[in-house]
Length: 372
Image (cartoon, rainbow, N blue to C red; front, side):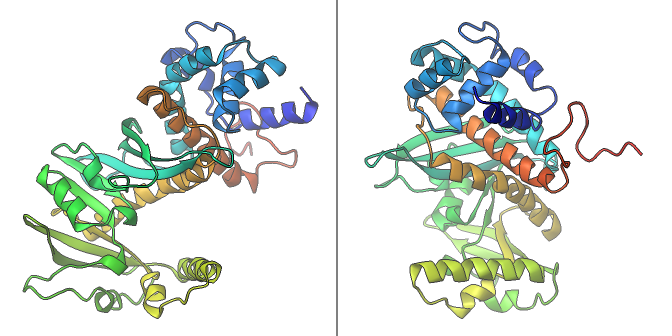
């Protein structure tokens, strides 16, 4: 193995949580290391599969050439399954290191973050799959994972595809904004907190008049100013009482949002509607929570948004590689591995600005700790 690759690996290891090897033993991932010399060799082999996008068969060939492991592709799949809890616990550690207060929530209800992505496997004829998953907070445990075709009836992102239980608070981004999906959650006696899609927003005020969303938002003129309005959604079987909560972004955040929208319109060669730029000045959510303040509701959604930063990187990484479709456990372990790589990338970016002149963290020295 060349020196550059070894140095890159050592740099990556410096970003791992301090007790990552101990977690391997606690989780049972390295109870019996058949074919692997150490927990480090196992992690490195798993990342060849997860981060580099190799198939299981390609991974075992590369691992043998690098003197990391001598195992079959079937043995590696079994090891991936056994590493599910190990990879999940490392993700939780890194989220905490990145400053995400997982225990913070607007409600005592059980929180579930719902998300999904498209996975395209390598090659000109590589298959496309849609994965839909749900993570509980604060444990970050994956309580739902489903793989389906990327297109076709019933393959879209919707709350209706999830098993919902009473007293849960389900958090989703704008892709999950739909009256039918929200009605489904409420029919299970659970609550919802979802980002509003302004283009498809239809709601009514206390007197039955349709809510003019943009006119309400324009009353928020200063950065950080919040507003909330009682609204009603009209489902197929019932009317859903809730609130729209919104906050005006900072000028810097508004400019960034506008640049993204304009780049997207330029790439697609479409004309940007003025109201789209107006909506981009705010974060707008809908919730069925009744007792929490608007600030608490928005803070709860901010928690989802912090984790979404890691999700966005994971989604980029998820387009590369072979998704294990053998069973739910191997697929969940693959998901945690993708999230781990995304979180390590996020940490590298965070500490890269002031990490050190030599390019990596010293062992046993917390990032940012001063000795003076």
